[in-house]
Length: 412
Ligand code: GLY
Image (cartoon, rainbow, N blue to C red; front, side):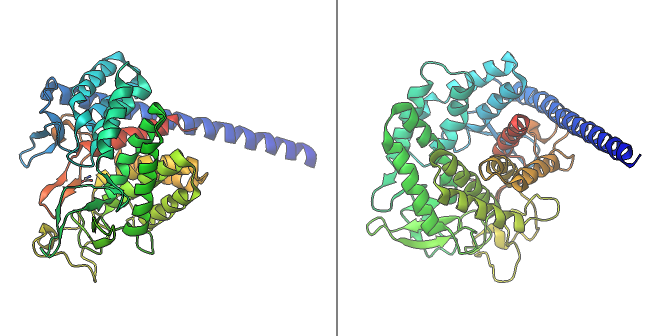
């Protein structure tokens, strides 16, 4: 009798597991389906508003009156809108999105010779990198290789880094840097790995590795938080200044900067399999996760208004007292943690990635159709110190939100 009860109980447990597994799969599919429907509807409105690519109308954010703001192709963000169109194509397999993605990507070809700053990875790889991955065409390979060559001209043997901006002025006015390197620069290295594979030229790979190693030595604090900007002496190669341009204070941790670091070092591990990069990515992620509020969307800087952190008077952060969030950092981190979960074989990171994605899809952060200048995600911060794009949508938040959604869809 006991045996029969035990067997029946086991069958019941198995049955319940199957039901809850199917319910889980069903709710994941529903979540993805609803977000795709939402993102395609909102992006159709964006396309209607923005028209055909002119080289001068890449969606970026929204002004105070609710109107779309755009940039020309030489800003750092033109690759994100074409990149989002690629993710919509990947998520829907609908040729309408393929045609739009191809058209907006092709408009960026002149950038392949651009050497004005370090952002070419964002500009070319979010657009042409996805194009090559999803619908390869003759010509994409050469554009990526030539862009890597252009970016490599900014690498310096003495500092062992790619120069981010051409100059830098600290907010207290006391440092005028000539060789600033910002944590964001980690994101431009992925294109160098791709170019190395495509061309067989190890030079790009070596530059990416050298830059990442210099970043480990100079941008990190002992607790794996990071300085946004390090300025180097271009003769001795030594770091002269550590501080911030877009964070709250020189010694604080800017949330989006930490997100770039998590994403960048996860990518470094994927490309090189060097365990040191995985160690850095894990520790940087743990720092980020330890400092999150309950809803998993970070304040724009982890140290806003904390004792021991003081913005300089010339930074608008000294006047801006609200403790607001930056959803763009959450989008980048959600996407990064999907990959970190797989590479580190740690479900904790995948669980966080999913929870962040669900939180961002909540009506608190996802804009009603037709609002938010037709961007998807609300409540982001461009730069409070520069008094720019505060509590606004940002095209890169949408790009990484869609990338996270695509990674979630691909996940088992
Ligand atoms: N790379 C510039 C930013 O994150 O705002």
